[in-house]
Length: 277
Picture 1: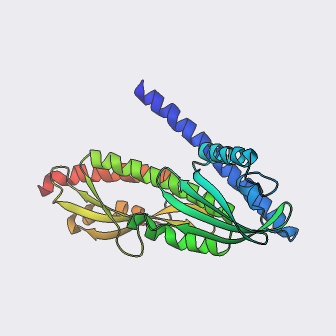
Picture 2 (picture 1 turned 90 degrees about the vertical axis):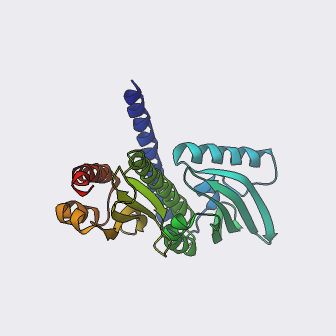
């Protein structure tokens, strides 16, 4: 019965994710239409569906509440402590804490209200200094690239995808840890990611391989994909599992193939361990 409930929960989660992707595509269509008319990105329509910059009123609080509910339900993003500040002329700065399942950071967006209904994004800043090093290093390249082009809707859709893929990675690694065949370390260099130390279920000292598991934004598909790098490997383990290791090293890896890969690795460990202990 528990397995049936988990399957239903997974189906519900997948439906929500499909809706999120649909929303991202609609936002991209909107931006393309705006560019074709030589208009600037309208921050309010993209983020909170407002027609103009709100004043300090009950209407503003209502819009903020709607924003929180929409993002949390549809794409897994929740904004907290949202506030705005007038910087002079038509310049406004919005600040918020962005919360996702696997990530939290401070966001600042500065806009120029050129005329009613049309706003130009002047700056986007993400404060990520409290983010763990393994996560910080793998997201920094695309965060810097997207904030540089001031594309807020694309930035948040990528963050949503990243959080989703991190949750998936965490789920698999937790399952492997419960089997006592993996120990997790944070990647410490500029690549970031997590290092999965694959070892015997009887002894964590008998390490067969170290796999760096990181994510990256693939520009062509605009999706977060999974990348594996073999940091270390036992020669004997490699000899009997060459094809499996090659499969891990294919780039990029999609989510639907990863569970099968790790299941095959679990089998390989079970078959290899007795002869080495």
